[in-house]
Length: 425
Image 1 (spheres, helix red, strand yellow):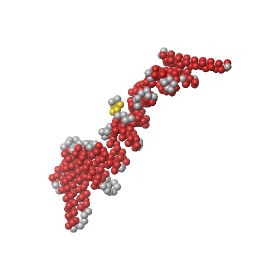
Image 2 (tube, rainbow, N blue to C red):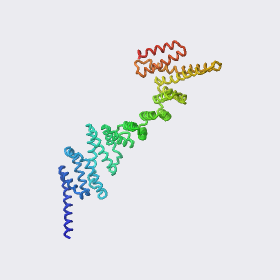
Image 3 (tube, helix red, strand yellow):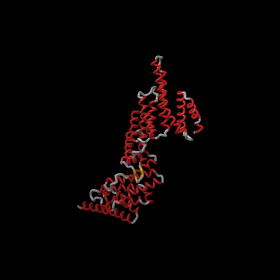
Image 4 (cartoon, rainbow, N blue to C red):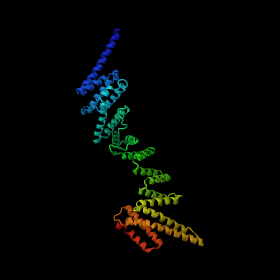
């Protein structure tokens, strides 16, 4: 019995010493003696059996929060805020079921708010002074704190948008693109369109470019779709879709996407022009040794798109030039076909004559479009290189047409204009 009594007495002494250490830590903290408070609470929690005491962990939380808020002590103990956050979580684990976090409630949840605000403010200071790695770590801490508060039902904020945004920006500026993608993705996945009145469209563009550069088609398409939901009128998304399909080389998919885009943007002349130009270029690509089997359909669709472009933007010389070329090329094809008709029989002679007439009509259809180029560019002063080139091409083709038609005055007119492009423009 004596031995049992002694053991119990020693245990009671130990509990008293523990309580005394926690009380001393609390008193020291209250008196502003933060270093002494740290010594007391660290000593108490160094004993293994004391680590199951919720009040001790709560006291450590408050002590280490005080250290983190003190510039001199924070420099000495740079992980103080991390330790405070860990102590908070330990306290919650021990106290949540039994005492319902009474100590935290009595403090109005101030310690967790101090942790969050501390992480965020230091992160902002680091960011503003160009310490992007440090800023990233602190914004990560702020995100962890806010996520923890949400998980416990202490706040209804589903995502800390500001901390997440600045974590992503800090990571990007620290050249940690993979980390930046993690945080930007969280914003996009949550369909965040703006933060504090600032449009987030560049975040979506960054993600699309990031995943597209890495040939991650699934995520590229995912963020293109999310982006279009938030910013349906921005042209970056259709331009990117077209670029991706162009690189893949599937023309049927490319044409289908163009059809979808011109239907969605019926007043955007550039989409109609680019569609018509690409159809024209593909139809006339003979690198495989021959034209595409559906050449006529491709050219007809190209003409339809280019006419629509000029309908929307009448003074768009590039569209007029390409459209004129489609008719000019058709005329040249017919002239070449004339040479392929042999024989001197009346029906052969008539067929050649009819084809020459048809070729002349195609030249006539081309002329107004080349004249549009002359009207738009010929009357201007200084021209850009591509404009000069377009103007010269239009004059050159008009010269050829009037040579074929044997209209000397027109031929001379456009020859003179051709020769003076560089002088006048």
